Image 1 (spheres, rainbow, N blue to C red):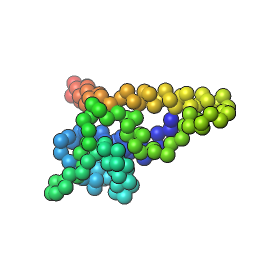
Image 2 (image 1 turned 90 degrees about the horizontal axis):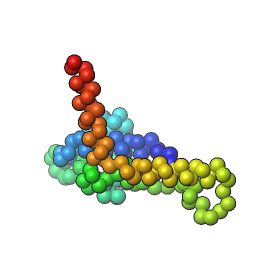
Image 3 (image 1 turned 30 degrees about the vertical axis):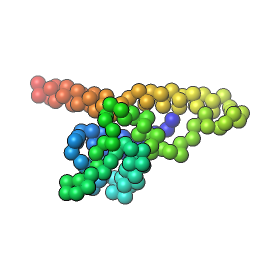
Image 4 (image 1 turned 60 degrees about the vertical axis):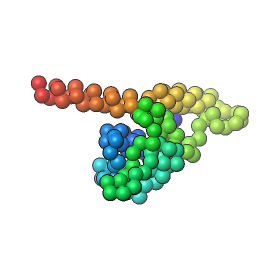
Length: 140
């Protein structure tokens, strides 16, 4: 499984929303923080919104918030929402495959299963823990 740069940005954006909970985050501020164009981020959020991973909040101070609890959203959910046209070796519907292509398909399935076991909550929690440890080391 190849995780595209678009999926990387989607994961970073979703993690940013998790850190800002429950406050909405504007795409303009998020685009600046991620150092990507607003139009590119809008394309990403259209796919995330379509898959109910984010929802918009209208009005002053509006923006986007997570569409589901962080304990429910997996990294695989985010990647699948963004890389919708990803074709794996398992998608070749019984056609003869080389051993290399078959092995690659098996590896992609294992990576996908692993990502399915990582929730946004777990990634958020581990990030906070590591930041606290790093700050403790610097302060000492």
